[in-house]
Length: 290
Image 1 (spheres, one colour):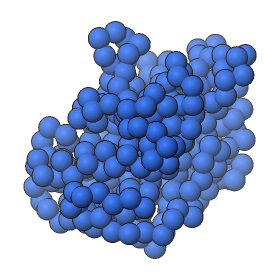
Image 2 (image 1 turned 90 degrees about the vertical axis):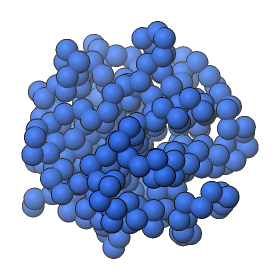
Image 3 (image 1 turned 120 degrees about the horizontal axis):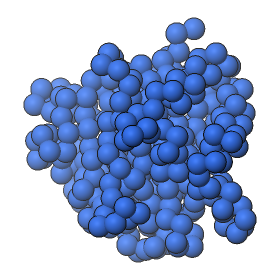
Image 4 (image 1 turned 60 degrees about the vertical axis):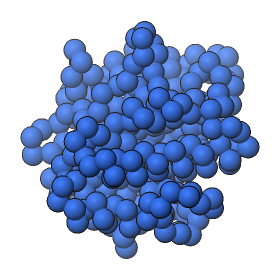
C-alpha cells in the first residue's frame, strides 16, 4: 500500500475482504444494503460494457459502512476499469484513515459542516484523501493520475461511529432521509455546458469536491446513484418521493438476498428504459427494524 508524505493520521489496514461489487444485497450492522450496476441499452448495442461501478463495505466491529458509486466517462476506453479502481481505492482509503474520522468527531468545530464551513485543516486532509484515491487508482492501473481512464465521478457516504461523511465529485446524486424528510444533499456538478461535469482525475474536480460532515443518528435511509437515473429520481429538480418510496418499500418488505433481483427487474422496466439508455448504478441503505 502506497503511503503519502502528508501526515493525515493514516493507519494500515488489512486488504479489503468484505467488499461487495456490482450486485449484492445484505443485512449488516442494523442496516439493509443493496448495490447494483447495470449496463445501459446503448452500451449493449455497441458491446461497450458497463462504465459504472458500485460498492458497499461493512465492518460490524468498527460500526463502519461505506457505500460508493462511480460513473466512468463514456467517451473514453477503459473507464469501466477506472470507475472500479476509484471505488475500491476510496473504500480502502477510508478504512486506513479511521483515526482521522475519530479526530473529526471529537472536534466540536467540525460537526455539521461542509466544504465551505469546515476548518481548513480538516478540509485539506479530506481533499488529500481524495488525491490518494486518485493516485492509488492510477498506480493500480499503471496510469498517470490525469489519464482518460480515470475520468470518473464519485459519490460516496461513510457511516462511522455515529457520524456521516459524504464525498461527491461530478454529476451523481446523494439522497438521505432524516427527521427533516427526504432530500438530495449534494448537487450534480456541471461545467460550462449542461452535459459537462467534473472527474476525479482532474485537480479542478478534487478541489471542487463537495464534502459534508453531519450526525448520522437521525439518518434512516440513504440512496446513491450515477446520473443515468436522474430523470427517475428527480422531479422538477427535487427529490422524487414516489420513485424512492417504491424502492425503499420493496427493500423493507423483501428479504435482502432477494432484493437485488427486484432491483435488476426495476432497471429493465419501462419506467427506466423509457427515460434512459445510459448505464445505471444505485446503492440503497435503510435501517433494519426487523
